Amino acid sequence: AGLRRSLACPAPSTLDRRIASWRAFHRMKNLPSPFDAPLVAQARGRARRAAARPRAPKSGNPITRAVLEAMLASCDHSHRGMRDRAALMLGWASGGRRRSEIVALNRDDIDDRDFQDKALLRIRLLTTKTTGPETAPRLPLKGRAARAVMAWIAAARIKDGPLFRPVSLADRPLLRRLSADGFRLIVRHRLELAGYPPDFASAHGLRAGFLTQAALEGAPLVAAMQLSLHRSINQAQSYYADVEIADNPATDLLED
Image 1: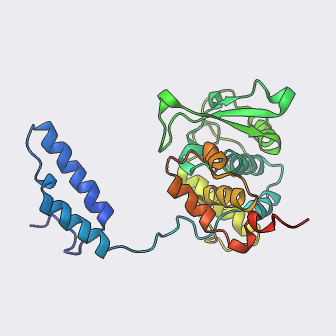
Image 2 (image 1 turned 90 degrees about the vertical axis):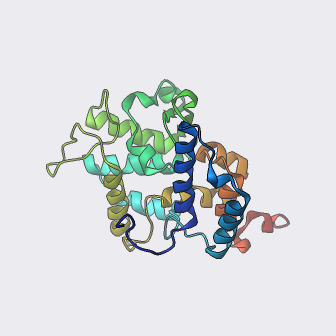
Image 3 (image 1 turned 180 degrees about the vertical axis):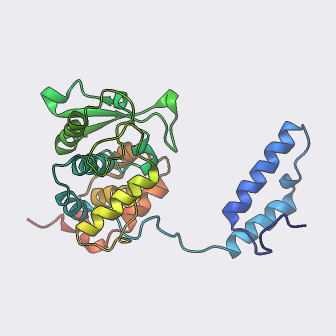
């Protein structure tokens, strides 16, 4: 009938989304859902096991602190360099933010009341994958990262509106918001300037790198999750599990 692009079996996650839509349709029409039948549930379970495959990482490599420092070293004192430094440091140090969360920030999401005394900012995230506006977290950003963000705000003279913006070829900050794809290009460009292949890591590498670095330095998983805002311990634990066991700080407990 031309309703499907191919006859190939969809991935289990795709099938789950489609079934969720049909379930919602049946609820709206006050109809019984055929997807609640035991045989359907059994078939879906078997299909999920048959299609099981290893979890594919969202980034080729994590952007750990050493990689991040190399990327930051490529940022000069131009508007473009100051913006990239601020965006990368905020994205990494505030808990490994997703690129959608970084580009969605506005000037009024940056609380700088404690900046002069403590070099501390509080970042308000109105919408994330795990929180909404009614429970918007305010995450701390300290030291170098906080100073980089405030230096960008001062240099670009941002009083309101989007925090991170495109920069013209003449090195002038524009008024519109930086797109998620624009942030992806920043990560790719800075990786190249730092001497890494452009596909070494994706923007999600900031998130993976923060949690990987936390594991390498022995930070408790719960403490890292307070910043990363993971709801699933199993998902956050996967970054800790990826660390080479010989690098685990727990192996050095008897050393001087």
